[in-house]
Every structure is written in structure tokens, then in C-alpha cells.
Length: 242
Image 1: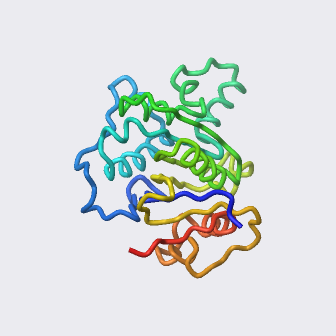
Image 2: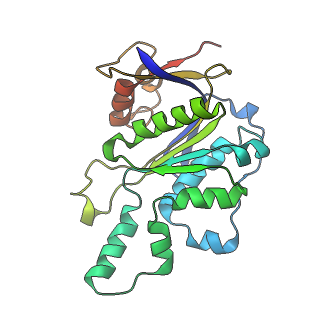
Image 3: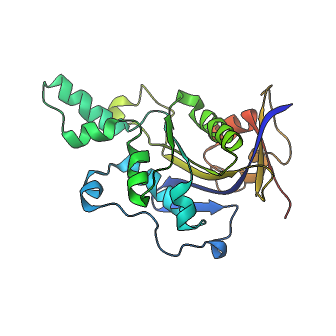
């Protein structure tokens, strides 16, 4: 039995900055031909790789909507571990009794990518930043869905992580480069997917589930086999027939 249902019209995912995929909405239906995200020079200089990675996916998703809609939609940003390379630099500074760089400290704040996004699109809409370890992707989807239902409006979701540097790999050996952005909407509106959060998440594997829908999209499926399996256990995500 489901306790939460919402729709998803478009999904952007990537395992690198150079290959960003948009599914659910044809690129011919995109209403923005130019980037909607534009940071002032001072903020651009502060960008770290994780923020750049996340913002590239956000900008691709934003082109499927009008500029005004993008500026007013709430944002849910999630990252399991934040920037591992930055964490290593901060730990090294502590070990060497050196002061932190102000830019490094700024980017170490978990919601820094969400802040960059709000600045870059001139938005004052609500933002939520969260982390939940290995369950971050599922928790972020649930949070976005709850906000869609409670606010009765679209919500933009972004989940981003990067592999830890070699020196910290033993702490997070499973972390991999991955970003997902999704446009979530009330279930009564037209959507490409209907998502239902399950009370009993034991082994959901229907033929039309997310795993079956996207396993054909390359060697690693939609976002790596591990992500697909975890999502399929937590959410019943069915593609809606055109």
C-alpha cells in the first residue's frame, strides 16, 4: 500500500560533467535554449567541483521549464557526503595546524550548492538541504514528494555526490560520481512517471518499475546498479503511458 504519490515529468542524470542525460522530456520540448543559471564572477571563482557537477544537471533540467517557474519553485538538495576532496584539504589543514581558506570553508557548508543555485537564478524560493548516508537518494525523493503534496506545487530535486579521494576511500568505498535532478509535480498533473513511496519496501520488482524501465540505458543502468536496486526497493516508479 502506498502512503505518498507524486509525479515526475523530467529527470536529468550524469556520472560525469561531460555526459548529461535528460529523460522523460524530449529536448525538442525544452523552452530554454540558453542557460538559465548565471553566477556573478565572484561566486563563479568560488565554485568547487561538486557544486559545478550539481549545477550542470540543474541547468539542464531548468531548460525544460520557463525562467519564471524555475525562480519560484522550491528546491530540495541532497548529498550523502558533500565534497570529499574538500574534506581532505580541511583535514590536512587541521593536521598541519594551518588556517582554513575562506573559500574552502564556504564550500564545506552542506547547502552551498543550493545557495549557488538560488543566487544564479535570482530565486528566493524555499530550499531544503539534507544528507542521509547511503539512503540519501531515497530520503531526498521522499522529501521532495512530501513537499509536492503539502505545498501542492512543483518541487525541483537535486542529488549529487562524488567519489572520495584515494586517501579517504576506506571511509566511503562505495561513493561514485553521480548527479540526479528531477522535476516533481502533484500526481493529478501530466507526468512521465508516477512515484509511490511504499510502507512495506520489501523487494519491489515489477516489470514496469524503475529498474526495468532504465536498466537498458547503458552498462551501468540509470545511475549505477546499486542506486537502481535501492530505488526499486523503496519506490514503485511506473512510467505513465503516453
